[in-house]
Image (cartoon, helix red, strand yellow):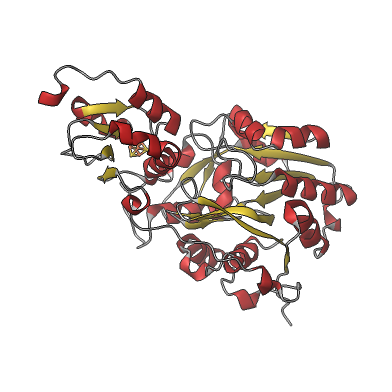
Length: 393
Ligand code: SF4
């Protein structure tokens, strides 16, 4: 008889106790003496419980559980989104304080040169740059926070390992449209599946205490779902976490591709969830809307051939500063902002975001960067001094 991989679930007790309970249902004793790396999702500068980042209490519960079995060392590492300082993100997310209390090292993955890894039998990427510190450890635990994702459907345990890519390599995954495609899916999904062939979590612990729904990973709303999922089978953890978010893993393209390539089941029934009646922890997450303007009335977004990292940045910017932008509305009463290398026409006074739009800069405000961080867009707008001739261009 083939035993189904175990995926444990716990809920309704907050981030710390949920994880403690979920880990109790797994035998982690074999980790004794191992060097453990915990990779949470701390990609953005945001406070705990805002839905952006993994809750530090969930990670504290993992540390306590691991120490009980006598692991050799534990460290926590991250390479956040481009433009974000790793230690600033750790500090704001509550990790600096937690790590000091637990005497655990925090690692900035971007602080050392990366390792270039060849992808055997690639779908789109022949090689990728992975942060070198990852190879100093015996066992890798991915600890995502539950989020819907406007480009990838969800971001959970497997996708969270994109934060092991070195600096701008993460952005490159969003910019592969120029490569010759053999497969029908989005190039981003192909690239994530290529990464999963060379770097895959040994274990996933999902923090579903407060996640993000809607326009995640940056522009959505926090949602309290109060559960945790843990498994040595990363796909199993993602499949069950999807179910607890009211979603179906079969609708998530990167999980589909990885399931096929790595021979991992995508069906809920293929996993053994020992938690009786675990379905009571299901909390329906809103999916990302298909049109940005629905979410931000009063804003006119032009997007011609942008890559998804610029789109994510734009979402973050609008989410954070969108309401303030009404004072910069043009004659039609709307604030105009544009991204993408294919832009040809735009209203005078438009804000052009990213290096790709530099050819349009004479028409309005241009914000350099690939992509620029949201605060840089904001500063460029508020400090812009209109040219006397601007209206006549
Ligand atoms: S500027 Fe924006 S759209 Fe252009 S390559 Fe950079 S991230 Fe992509």
